[in-house]
Image (cartoon, rainbow, N blue to C red; front, side):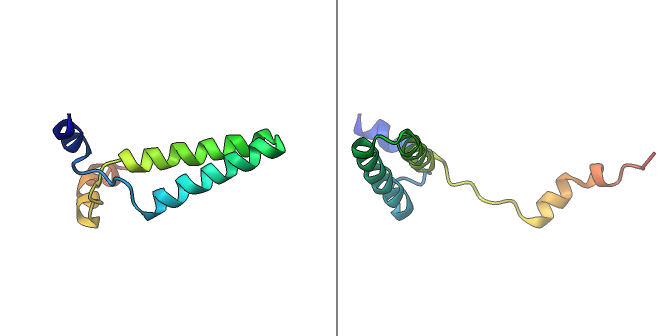
Length: 82
């Protein structure tokens, strides 16, 4: 089981400082919304928590270089205008 989780998380961002801050902020906002009964705060905290999980599970993708982008879009850029 541990190896499967390790294989799944290979190449992903995992828990970094920004995710930690987002998670803690969402928990604090949830606590505040429990005492104040403001629905918007709870929704905002859930969005932060979902963003944190999304960032944690997203893969490290190399950004395309300018030459690669220009090469891939060369046919579109050279179409004659009608």
